[in-house]
Length: 147
Image 1 (cartoon, rainbow, N blue to C red):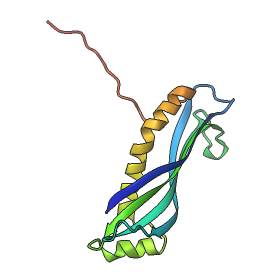
Image 2 (image 1 turned 120 degrees about the vertical axis):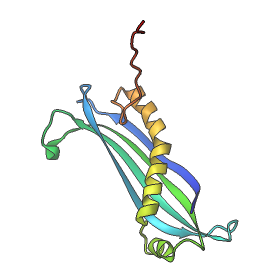
Image 3 (image 1 turned 90 degrees about the vertical axis):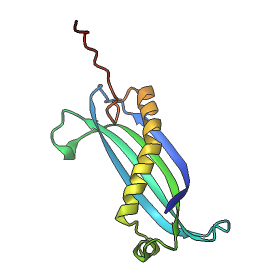
């Protein structure tokens, strides 16, 4: 299995007026519209395309009840990913794709790939909008030199 293409179709970032500086960030990724693609250039692979939506949502850190959490900001990435599956890959994988499902092992690979592609863009948007970072940033702790 290999990734043949990756495209963004939507990048959106918004900080709502109620934002006061502290918020929890939650990440959700959804896949939809899984379908077989015909590529004339690639003969030895079955190719499949899936749309994705990654949503980073910021909610009030002080609200204990998750049902009443007010949304304070949001970053959305939308796009699609194109993969090639070789004839040697297990038949269950191709069968799952044909039935519009993404197998768990491939879904894990997709999730990690999409997070890698989106994380740096999200960090830049968070910085520009003064939103808290959705992932912890490395920090340096200096210690005095002992003699």
